[in-house]
Length: 118
Image (cartoon, rainbow, N blue to C red; front, side, top):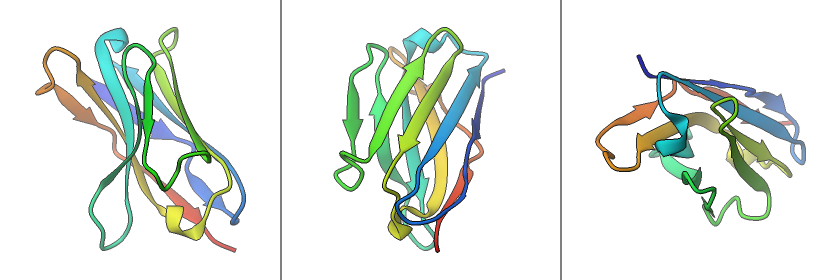
């Protein structure tokens, strides 16, 4: 059974930092491309950052230079380090993974709330 479990969300002041984690189980982590998405109230879900099986990364323009995505195959975990947080970063953040050769095998975590407010 495939599971993606996010953790690390919370309330932070503008300019602060948070690190999100996504623990994967039931998958061969090394053959999965992974990513973080977010959805703010009243908005569509959007890609924040992704990291492929080889470690190549891609970021939304809105988070470039502030967020850092990484993955650790030793413990099947993906991370998102978020710095210089802004109120507009407030959203539910979701972990996503899909198998490289079979992208139809796609999975989502349950989401973790990030709120940036003073």
